[in-house]
Image 1 (spheres, rainbow, N blue to C red):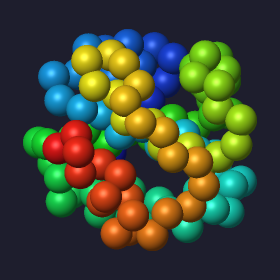
Image 2 (cartoon, rainbow, N blue to C red; image 1 turned 180 degrees about the horizontal axis):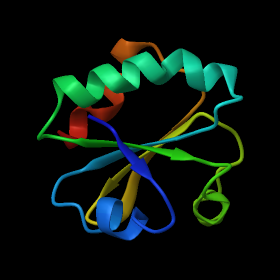
Image 3 (tube, rainbow, N blue to C red; image 1 turned 30 degrees about the vertical axis):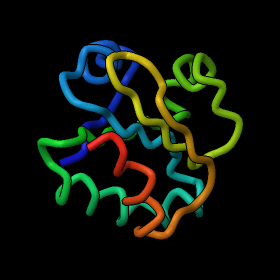
Length: 105
């Protein structure tokens, strides 16, 4: 289950999370974002309880995208203890997405 992030819940859902958090910065008009969406959803199910998966629409929460210098989407960030641990920009195959999160689960 993915959590939809907003400016209002970002602090609680990401910065204060007890487990690592994968944040998918995306937008509805972004073709590559749509391509990786099914893989992100599968990761959310397969790694439930080990990593929290959240989606942040950059059009709805521009100030957060700006704060984390999101220049292109999709961008995936892994947060742990309120800090950015890793970043990937662009589309990924599912196996590459699993490799990306593996050190944090």
